[in-house]
Length: 107
Image: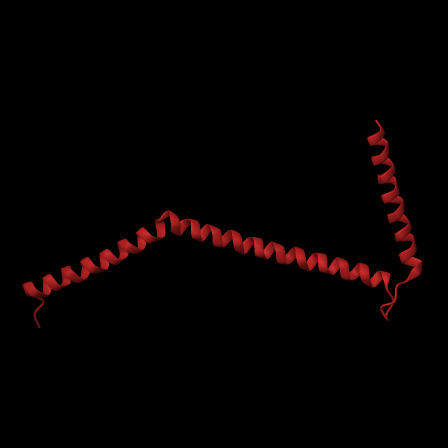
């Protein structure tokens, strides 16, 4: 068995390696291209925003469900002993803001 290669074998090896090198350089060029980098950054930001929005939705939904459960009984009817004080406070806050707004307009 001889390790001697023919010129044709060497030439074929050079052509194959040249093609592999060209493919590797094309891949590197694609990875460092500004559009590719921006697309990767945009997808990471979009994923982060989606994840954050999803977490916020779940948290708000849990709070709203908890508030709704505390204001209604098991059948879904409002608990007047809890709803009326909240309504009174809401009316007082809106009334106070209205009074402050009217005072500012008169000045």
